[in-house]
Length: 240
Image (tube, rainbow, N blue to C red):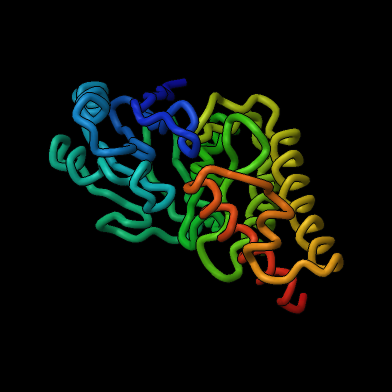
């Protein structure tokens, strides 16, 4: 099975060890999430795909650490870019051919309003972008109103595929998808309950609830925690 992983040198508190890009197939290939526009990383991807007869670049979502290098890589390979932030939008269920079988786009909003996973049925695997990370139990969910409900439904959708393997964009390959999905779902539900308890305890305002739920955080992580709390408040205020 020809699936190769390439780690970009952009580690950090949000990107963990860095963004992972994936090359699927050989003669007919797809590159999933080319990552940041860094010369060494783009050169490695271009070199790995140089012998392919055709290459398609696929984006799980448009965040810069996933899609920033897409234009440079597309020029180097003469490839089209499909997905959020690319030249060609994609739809749920759309198929992209590779030598290893079709990659099927699965709409999984939550981390971003437009987020897709890619299901490689021939290998019972799913490339999950930032829906699920290879380490820990959480990903950021706070970009837009409705994100929390979308995220929980997206986890359900990937679970329904019953994959054997998950390929995340951050962290190592996940060999026990059911346990990982349950862990990420349980964490999100626990955060929702913490916000609910903070409200019941008389904490008012996003800043106060964020301190109650997350404690003290560095500025960048505090900003992300604040938007996460805002998204949960939106979720709790929306009738089911």
